[in-house]
Image (cartoon, rainbow, N blue to C red):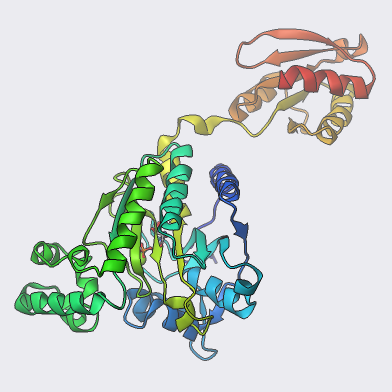
Length: 420
Ligand code: ATP
Ligand code: MG
């Protein structure tokens, strides 16, 4: 019997997990710079929450959710709905008029697994609740761009405005008329949804549909005065903060809740899975979920698998070892001494590896080389008898003799030498 992980569910093994940690550490640092607080949310929620928040006619709700039908609960396919549920449930708007929250964790969608597309995947999700300021929109995009830039990734930012309940109906009418004339040229999915959810046709990936909608009316031309003002405020903010972006009139996003600003961070390096992050404003959603009236929101989520793939493709700086020192003991006496010294070094904060299998010096040096450690401490029997050891710098191949004093002083000396 050979049980394997489910298709689309993946183990993250040592060797790769370091990249995840680096990504998460940097993200936490940047979120803190922008004054975001962490919130941790359950993975299982009532199915109704997602149906109401994300929208019945979306791909996610129609076909991608992992639902326990008998219990009417669903493994979260995204974080915003749960986060808003918690915001409303705990009255967070009373504590602070503007909440800046982030959450990191796994999401679940039953889609076709491929490179950068899994069934359990991870998102870093950030939301600002309680502000309509276009500067917040600009700041969100600037924060995403900062994270991607500090990761060394070159990713472009595309933005659109989806208008609001005032201007979208007018746009919808003109889009419906436009699609009506081209009904025959659309894919089957779009034929069906052109009447229920016509905006979705605009971002259909089918080349047939893409061609049909090239001349489609643009929401940008239908925006009401308030939405147009908001958009120019966002653009002004992005320019002030030096964030590069382009307007994409076809971007409508796969969730129903968006209003006004929507955006995606796009890479050319992952084939079809081009979006590494996406989000937008959802000014009516909190109220629609039973929350306080008129509280607006905006958020985005970054896909961690896709970011890790991009980091792996950059490879070069990945070889940095997570180890400061390798202790090589030769013979029982030295190994015994090394065993104690290793523990003292670890207590002193160093990351130390020691071979406890009594292997030859050659084999231990090979291990150290594989680990990419910067230093090896070689403990030979004769040297040890004379109170000495050898510290080898793996990069320069230089060796220096070290006088072994009492353990505390030896630790101090080694820490000083290695951190220098
Ligand atoms: P896509 O168009 O790639 O399906 P989406 O619009 O469904 O993405 P969102 O719901 O906006 O994605 O999620 C935000 C980000 O989460 C995406 O930009 C992507 O990086 C990541 N993501 C979404 N679905 C998956 C998945 N199945 N596997 C891995 N990452 C995903
Ligand atoms: Mg999707």
